[in-house]
Length: 145
Image (cartoon, rainbow, N blue to C red; front, top):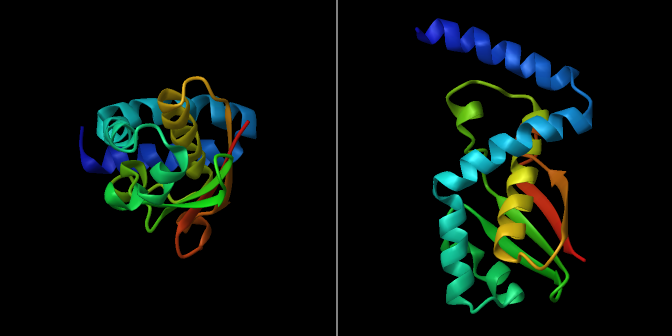
């Protein structure tokens, strides 16, 4: 298949994301997020988790050690921000998908990674800012129950 085909296909994918309701988009991108995280991202986060002996506050404070991400403790052991300075999603960078609706994949990835690391915890993730929405960086709020 040639590049022209993929460019056209990804444009259709982008249009489809924009037409989906949020629940359907979450369902689709949850699977995309897991596949992406399982390619190495999850392992990087697990390594940091082990380094900090599971201390959530230290984990988010030291998140910048992974590279291309940083964290912030808002409420100790409860609420955090995670920041990405740019959109590194291959569907965006290589596929040309520019809709902010694609950022649901990042939100789902944060949920998947968080629940994989802290399996005894339930967490809620809120998209606050995204590069694809025109913001200078991506920012997500993470709240542990």
